[in-house]
Length: 179
Image (cartoon, rainbow, N blue to C red; front, side, top):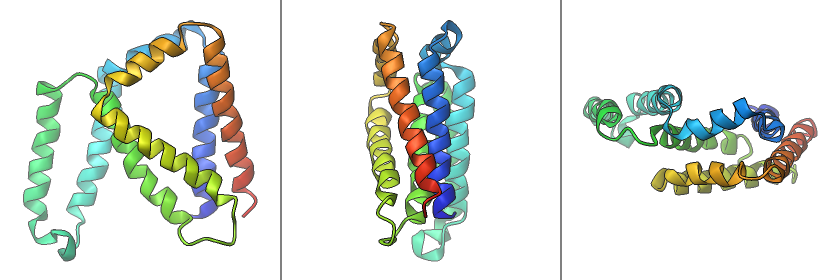
């Protein structure tokens, strides 16, 4: 992945997310509030993240437990299937955390050892903040539900948070074309 694409994609994602939060229409608010326990979001996020992770496990090299990859694959596959039946609460949040952690790697590797462009630190700081939140929310997924309750409790908070996300997304999009 090129550094331009690795900066542009999170910027566009932030613009879309910021615009949705900034708009704050009742339909968008209900989507955000329902997402942590949504079965459709669970299928999209949790199983999308699980498929990506299982692909990584399947392609392990011999130096990374590659000779045991079939056992690892079967074990993680069973955990993925059983989680849907035995731990269904907040699987969408955990799936979003999985996707964030997995997506952080290629984005950070695009700017690895790139000291010629100091503006890459806008991207790296954003990714590290996202990874930190993903680790925190992966352990305490109900916090996202509480955050959405807090965010949409007043009319000013979504505009402030949405505007900040929109602004940082625009900054990343501008930075993407400066490399």
